[in-house]
Length: 128
Image 1: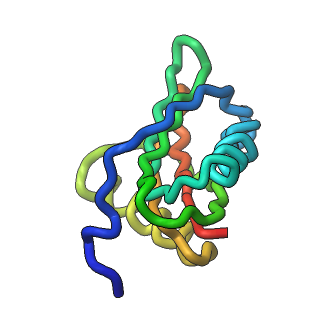
Image 2: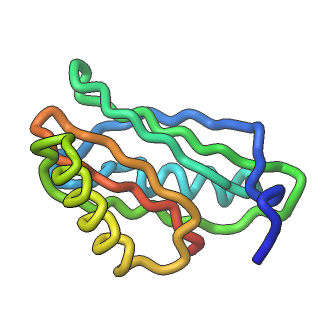
């Protein structure tokens, strides 16, 4: 395994898009990987925020420029509704997150966002 230093980064790119309402991040799933490919960035992290009032997503990519870039893919999985944030509710969410991740290879990082209907969506950034 590589050193944690390989994950450290201090460059960020911000994107805005529309939640497609069907469990995906819409055009951002293509826009972000295309930017990564054209920029030569080495992406290390993502952040995703759903702005309920605007029905918009803000997605950030944290990256490095001092190492070779690589292709990524963004995959969104609806892991169900969040009902309770007590211990049992959080344990259930953890289980569903693990189940979602089990079907995805080469995960670099993940992010969650919650819609106005309380759907929890996991966005995985994977090496393509």
